[in-house]
Image (cartoon, rainbow, N blue to C red; front, side, top):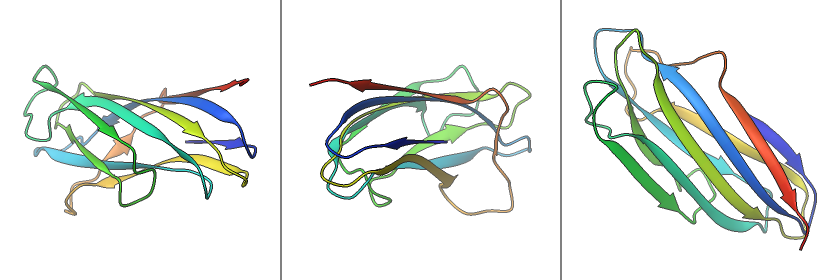
Length: 130
């Protein structure tokens, strides 16, 4: 999921992701927000704690200012017919470079259990005039 943005702009980008491991074990999801060079901002996430074993367990908030692959967070995705929901919001002020605000994700710990981002996951983006 991504949105293309211009240079010297202020954006709020919201990601709503439904994910499932569809397997007999619980896995976790590592995510990061990538932005154009020179951008600053913060990303917030609310999702299951990475140790959760059901979709009704503790939610875990994350807040980061590192908008690169190294600024990742971990959320739980449980084996269930019910998808796990993750909500992420990024506030990004682009610098002198245009480009994309991108949601990147992978397993938190690599294993043979796949994670599927389900149909119906979406991104909303709003540019603010300063």
